[in-house]
Figure 1 (cartoon, rainbow over the protein chains, first blue to last red):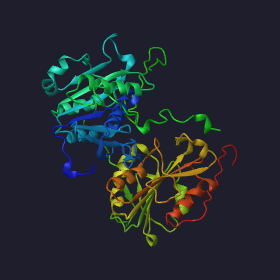
Figure 2 (figure 1 turned 90 degrees about the vertical axis):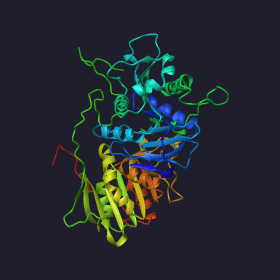
Figure 3 (figure 1 turned 60 degrees about the vertical axis):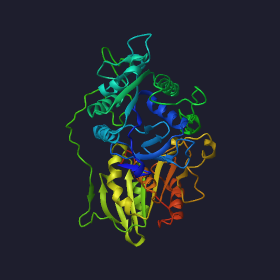
Figure 4 (figure 1 turned 120 degrees about the horizontal axis):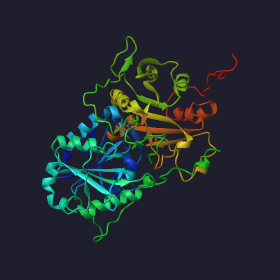
Amino acid sequence: MLQLKNKDLFDFRGYTVIIPSICVGNAAQLACDLLIASKEMERIGSLMHPGLIPVFGPSAYQHDPDERVASCEIYQSKTDKLIVIQFRTPLISRHAQSLHSYLAQLVQQAERVVVLGASFGFEKREIGTSPYEYCVSENFRESHKTELDNVKWMEFKGDVVFGGGNGLQLFHILKDKKIPVMLLFRYVLEGDNSTDAKLIIKELNDLCSSFLQLKLEGEKMKLIVPISWKLLFGNDVTSLIF
Amino acid sequence: MGCPMGFGELNIPSSRAFWDDCDEDEPVLKDKEIKKLQLLYEPNETQTPPPTKIFLLIEGTNISEFVEALLLKNAQRICKISSSKSSLSYVKEQGLLIASLYEDLTNSGEVTELLLPYAKEAEMVITLTVKSKIEYQSENLQNVRDDITFLRGINSQLVHVEELEPPNFVVGVAPGIACWRHNENLAASAYVAYTDNVSLDTLAAKPIIKLLQDLGISCNDTYKPVYRETSHLYM
């Protein structure tokens, strides 16, 4: 169930939609957190679905303190024609297909969709190449041929993105619905993945400036860490167990 | 990191994408039939939401006895919710609808949807989630260290209940209903009781009882859990 702040203004036409997969290190979700906080994106709605564990709490972003977190939040940047769909919970597997189909329907009119993801670092087979791999739908490839010819990323040819979570599933569903879609993932290792998140966003900005415009203050990108990243690894456990 | 658990066995770790430990690398079964959860109504009970001044949802791992003893003496059960540990009851004299919810995150999305018709009609929704103190994240833990139970609110009506601060949040059916109400601009307050004893004893329950009374909900002044012999060695 979609809950929109303003039903009349809901239109993805001409927009780039970024969807993080729930993957190793939560790297893609962290990247989206950075994007939303840094661009001070506006919350336009949230999504409820049986495939999502409901969540409620104080705002994750300091630029929007009156908002409340939900399991799936939708953000918009009108100036950049950018939508970010952020997830805060893992999925319930028996409803994942239904959720992905719903998302596909939601973004049907979008100009393009970028699914961000990650894969286990120890699955990378070629040393010395870019830590990013991608796959694209044919219609995405046609409309971004020049950009894709110039990227340093490797094109992913496999069937499984180990540790990629629901990213590849979602990619295939969007591709089947003829939505121009790219899956972009980075090889990461579990740990403090906030650095991976920053690198993912920087990579998107550096190499895809026609997709996203994250340049602030003359070519330098200023990243803002959201308030929800406080205590990222929890409390000092010793203080509560005694 | 994946490590061999035994000779020849490869243990590929999961990516955390799926709550219920699904093997994400398996091909998706497209025609999988999903059995929907249902509300199991008592005989002669109507499915139409009753007139509700307050819809109170209390959720935790072991709170059914507490809710039963404190709030459900004069209540009429409407239905069971998916499992026999969760139920919906109504106190007609107070216009009070009470959901006693056993924490089951796997089904929480579905159960939230089942309760939406009731949430839609209520004048006010109040949710209470009982959680272990260890789940509370703060840079000032020393302030709550000595409290057996302390409270936090999200859109709290009560001045003396502090707002829950980031990065904390609550999950489950009760927060889901509160979230839905908030997004619909309908009146809702969510509370979290962080406690040393999630099953709630007399002391742990005290702040919760005071909270409910401050919110205008009529209930007993104290809670005394039923003593159960837990020894398996002697009768």
